Length: 577
Image (cartoon, rainbow, N blue to C red; front, side, top):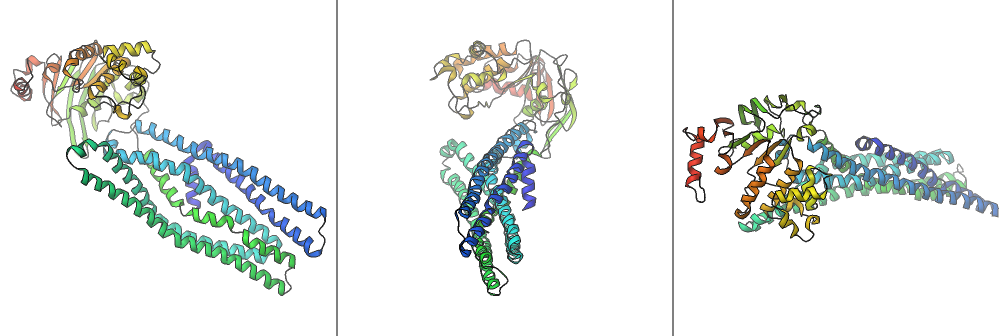
């Protein structure tokens, strides 16, 4: 138990850790105020038995009880506030830490770990720590502290009864230790079941169109139902496992109370205990374990707290990319790859590529699907780190730059656009957060999205659904281009930027892209011939290697992938040279 509590407090860290320790101090005072009821009871009993009940005695007892109640209430008030601040403060800080940490992890992590897992950690797990864990930890510690202090106070009245209380405590902790061991086996399964439920639920909702289109409703519903059933079974198993131990803990405390009563009567009959103390011990037998019973029941969840801390800390312990570079400004915007190699899950994706991309030129990257085109762009922008070789921007290895200073040099227009649940204006000004509305509108007009934005219910103040769900693919693409226009970085990476644009807007959008890319270093992943043929340099990537390179005029004369690419596009419907 102590090990779990220490781990939890260390995880909270900083100011929140200090608040939890302060809460423990308040807990000691709460226990002291609770224990004050005992001398008040003994004092009144003594007066009643001796027939010396006076106003003075009554006032003394009332004063002690008043101090106990008021003092306990005031301390509990501040203690509750501190606990809430520390618990919810920890949750907020750790969520921010995890979000910041995720920014600097290699993109491969997000391929290995599903959205459901990350979502579960930042929602369910952190909610457990902020809400459940705080109450579990503090109620457990408070119950133990209160019982210990009352037991110590009883030693001063009769050491024999005090020893009985400590013997009951020892038996209680033995049973609790067994429960903790059982919890250690079951709690990870519960956490995994929670994560699995979130994963399947997200998968079902995000893929609902495919589920309906391919009539997968029965199969996908079955998977979701299985996850729900597994979660239900885990929770039921958890409760079924803990209930016998909780009953045993309760039995131990109640039987210890019975033992206190019987022994007190026995000691009185034997003449070794005063009647006043005997009656006082009998009354105390009903209150000494009240807090411990509650603590014992909640302590069953300590192992869940332990697993939750491990899951959250597990993400924070993942080794990030080296982000300790310098805040540099490139002397130029030449891009060089020198014998670059990169593998993913032991599969080689980029195999010894060496290429020079002069600044203010356009380089088109073409090739078969899965050949490594997107990965190559990700390595250039350092979404991943190379396994060997190096990528340079302005003559410096990209690893010499801090991540933030490196990202200032790149704008991206991806084929799969993600928009945040925020206003249209804020989604556009992501690249320049303090930009005035005039610049936002100017960028939107250049990206050919001003008209459809103005047709939205609240214009630029319209809140877009999560992921841009309330907009069409073409509309999201154009907002993405407006965002890139706002950032105005010297290097622009385009991943088939016109893929989701309807034909009537394509001409205007191409013009907007030309404005975006003017006087910049351009890398474009392209499948359309008309976006490739005007490039200064064309790289044909196949199986992680540069199969061909050169201008359109040079490559069209060679037998190879590029000429086959051109021929297939010329014969396809709608393609014209």
